[in-house]
Length: 488
Image (cartoon, rainbow, N blue to C red; front, side, top):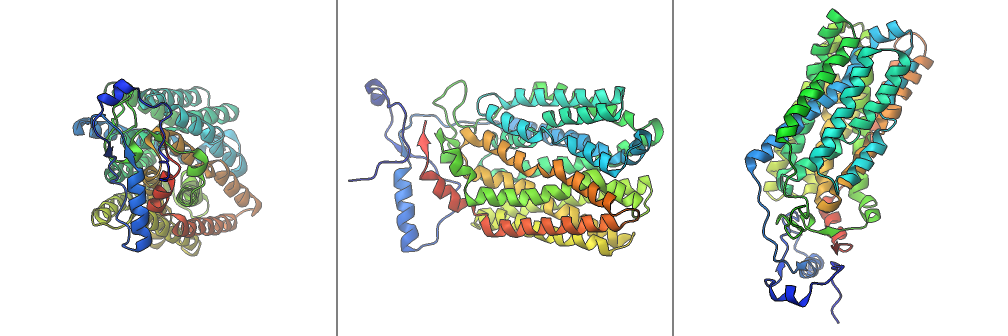
């Protein structure tokens, strides 16, 4: 007796429906690379292909390339504004600590406050994205974070900054997950590396633009006016997004016609997989390990790098801002190179385990080594080079993590899973600045505390990269996930 297909319809079609249906056709499986030709794998592939037969009279979804890239461009600018919002506290750290009369420990608490509700809002918005258009979720999110910045501008006190940073995290928490999900709705699996990489380019472009721009504002008008500037940037983005923003066709069932699905891969159709299976698979865990380690270094870069360069290394405010900008530009270069290299490799049949997983994991492990090497350098060109590699190279993990997860997660669940992924990987934003600050404070005067904190950070980043090398293999887990799939 033949085994029942794992893709089950909850309500079978009526007899009348059956008469008007076209003959069953296989769902395209474009995301799977060819398996090695062994008897075991040939049998497995044959069984999997036979089981993935769906009755469908659904027309193929279409998209406008112009609209797809217009939406993608807006998401890049969103990332730019988002990271300018995050980077602002590090850029105003020295004058703000002086005016408020706080030390490194209290400042670390302020820096980490943005992540208190970050994870919870990322998960909640991810599940909402399964039902609510991403366009409107992004509008609500940017409105929240812009208002929080205006509040700090109006009344810059320690307590108010602390509370507003928490509200800021509530609005910014879903940003990355929703943006990745929005891009995935407009681009097929093999196309997604570039638009997601460009979003990350926008993130580090935000740091690069914010560093000199906000430093100029601080030097000429005071640090609290920097918060006004980023709040206004959010409002400008909202005005443009209201006209340009729209959800794309690659999101499972469309709202207007539940029978219309995008014919890209079975994961872009109307199937679901138990969340415990997705979150427990090796590739998801590996992407989280690499993302956690990369985000640790990003949290340190955003919250502590300007203060480290000024207090421990003797840089001026402008010099520290220029170093942060150089690190951001280096990250942008690596992101673009990674996206181009990954597309090149995958078009030539290289597995996503190599093209995406190994590339991100190796880059992160190497970055960890360079973070530790920072402690052996002195101010100058060599130190800037090591800082750029250490804090710029590993950040390619944010692109490859999101697109790798999209390979084995159904479109109807992608928003929620990416929200959970972002919530986990951004958690170092809560504790990394505080732990770093505690280490610096505990070591007393001088740069000894910074040295210890950087060595610990380098080790953590390197271990995360090594874990990714062992665990990430999207194709393997995509095939495994299909054994748990249900048609809805």
